[in-house]
Image (tube, one colour):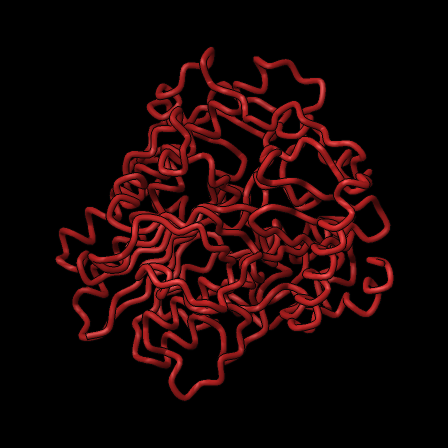
Length: 492
């Protein structure tokens, strides 16, 4: 019988926010337990540190420069505001090969056919009056390969305003009460009405409903659960905030490092610059609390798999679309305009088989997750492999393919009205960032893991700089990156 697959994706979660990644302060017992039964991928990277394009890469197996959703939908720089339908979409491929497919949670890949009636879309139309002419293809989970598709159009904020969630609250006699509201480095508050009234709890309930439905069917299942957290707004139940003493919440290692020369674009992200440590620690407390809240929900989902008797035959993949700055590198907040580790490196924990290795330091990216899911499901036969990634199953089995890449590439086209063209390549020793029209970056990852010194102009790093530039250009050529036509001259 084919293996069942559960894909859990969080939003804007740093790899170093989890205990099994070395964070001794974070309380993530369920993820740590999952890691003890699976493999921790120490060097997993998003294709881009922006929501829509990263999520489209997961559904298509392609980098944003090829799938065309290069920034968030309904903003400049995005070629498609609705994920185009195609046989290669993950849901379509899994369903075609006999899987019962289900999806719940954040989508951010379209508004669907009635976009103009939705308040979030109307806000976009006030900025771009002709935007309505570019939508209407109905890109929602239920139309992109998922038999059970909870359709939450657009970004959704934190998910609390969707009618499905409001109906859940009413049906269960729950309220949604926020106290101690904060603003500054995002929005934060205490969810005083308890964890049962949270969006994360609701989504886990929906996922468990799908599992119960799937267990009654004579076919394998593919469940995709996408939390809105720990992306802000950081609305956290009190019991998870209480896990962290505000006076002892540690600051990130790279909190104060502002590498020079620094690309000017970085200044557009330094919303936390000049904030006092107490305020920063308060937001870190809420972020950590949100991480622990999601960890608790992951534990509920694992218990449901065990209760239904399908845990042993189910591959569980836990990851995030991208990371989060949250004060790092001189007060940078959010993501999208930098290639520092905190925004581009993501957690990736995979529980697949009893004999898999405990961790791998191989370089992995989002397109590899797409390829791996298809490999686990034996979905490659008879279908042209269109994605840019490759299956990581050999790595989980302790094999080391001689041709496995010794580096990873991340790209960005900016966010909102702040458009740019960035390409990053990282290997064991170095990270090189090409910032078109701005200062490039070069970091010595062995001796300066916090990326505190930009060595791009160092004469001592001349050879390393040339080597990494050449590796990047070669990757862009192999992967038909459309930016190559312009930047191969700039990189000289």
